Image (cartoon, rainbow, N blue to C red; front, side):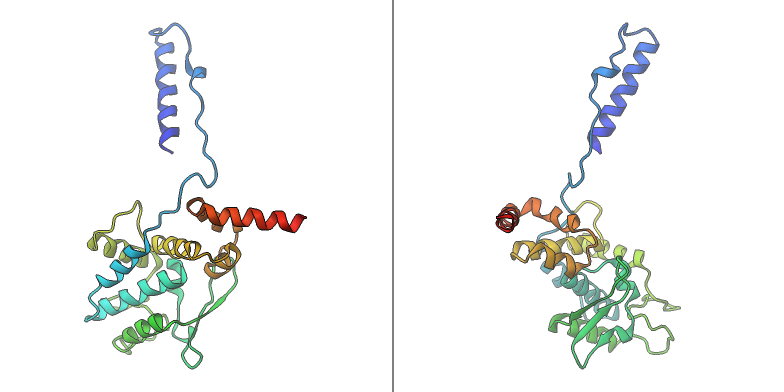
Length: 231
């Protein structure tokens, strides 16, 4: 977008110079139009070491700390979206079978995950201090009265604030940063793209392939596998 803005400004300036007879020749056409390409930019992920540092920075002694830590663990572990975190209800956790259901995925389908020990313990720690005098079934509530369910914007803003306090800097940081980090972590662990896409609820396989730009060896394996299928 920076290149597009620069070329656009230059074309406008040259058009002005020609119109005012400052420059006798219209040079606008000599300025190439910038082009943007799909998947031209890398996802705004952070390194997994930074994810661990972010989690370690949360003081879990308070109700707010327990809530935020549980949200951060879920975001990083499952690559969830802020809307999916906000929509989580108490009944979505199947404690006897150690599973969690994500019913409102972007593609309209639901996903059921095995609940890791880390995620399960984090959620339980929060539920033990979560207010019980509210009728809301959503898991994560605001920290102040009237204790309403957190909205997705508040989830993302919380992550952004926690990242700043942990001295982790990334452009337009928020809940999606941990989603990107989760996907990138799986790519680097050599998990197949199709499995990753299903895991995080990508509707379009191209969304997952975007992360291959920083894992060339995975793309090479994908091309080789497709070539073998054609033989």
